[in-house]
Image 1: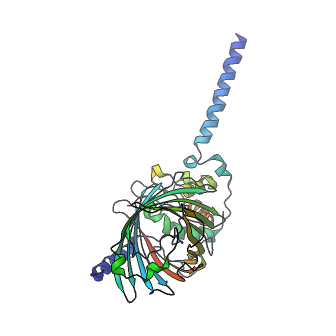
Image 2 (image 1 turned 120 degrees about the vertical axis):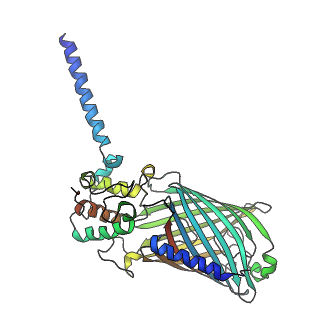
Image 3 (image 1 turned 30 degrees about the vertical axis):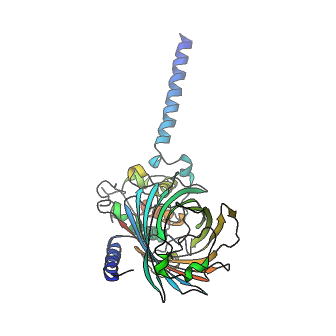
Length: 130
Length: 286
């Protein structure tokens, strides 16, 4: 009886540990590779780069997400906590790689520095609209 | 012959106005070399690339190339080219068309990004676009009258292996080319190499036109590698061409490239210009 209880508790603990691990993986922003979250934003907190990011957003993103980033039609609102709280590296990865099946193009034509500026703008300037 | 240039100019001017109103500029710096970027799905890329050729023993010439590209899928871009030319002291001619498809098998960014390119070309011998350089070179053709050359039509299949990498703001692109006349002739080979970099990688906070972030400098080296019967550099043409791209506005970019002929089988100077736009297809964007 005692050994069965130990086995039951052990299996349950393993299941909880595995499920928490899997949930952690699936919670990466747009399924970005976990290692992308380790990338650091070199411009974090820099208002000049955030302003440059706003300019780049108008040039490259506003046609789909709207000038105020609240989304247009099937293109999503970016003033959300999902975006503002995402790991900057994951957001960088997603903008650079895109997601063809969701209609998000790859912005690999932009130098990495400009993508970081867009990330800076998205996370510093776009507070979720309530 | 281009008998009705005014309607063509009007249509092209209309396209330019439409693009400026709604489109955005492409940052494609190269004229001959391809990098790994495919067209965004649902977007048209429209460009016009005039070329002036300055030859030693033959009349100078003008070659024009109108390109209309479309992003079908993230991994598939298709493009139509319409070629025409004017030879000074001789005349003008429509020289044919090309249809190309580019397929990118891996969409994620890697250290080396391959793209496969397949093109069918229906051109006549009067073509002066110099879209690629393959096989052996014969400059004597430049001296023949257009009326004779334009009756010699060719159907060609061209394939390229495009390899391209980005590193610290630089793009390095390598194209290996093979071309075959579908009726006769050997498999011909050629190459094209390109490197480019924006003058400034990060954008400035304020809007600007003539600033380093909007200017990309680069260079291309391209030429023939003979054919399957005589592979090598003998009797081939090669060109070294600096490239400057200026993103004039969010939706207009200009390019210029003076190509210097490096061998006695090369045209001494190919001066290329280009204007490029991207335009969303109707209904593809809100």
